[in-house]
Length: 80
Image (cartoon, one colour):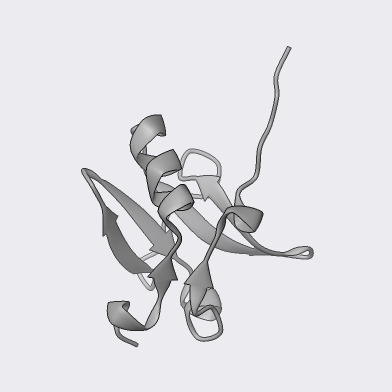
């Protein structure tokens, strides 16, 4: 698996840079989701994609199938 095989949408890269933290593409029953590593910590088997000063980790299970990471995978939570 080569990092060149996974394309990261510019909107996702901009979001990660703005948040200034690491994220992980993880497997859920709803499909692939991008979560902060504080919720879904990276695993040793993850593929690490540098995004500015941060890292986007991709589960090895998702990396086999995902060719493009786009904004539909972002998980937004609004806390009151």
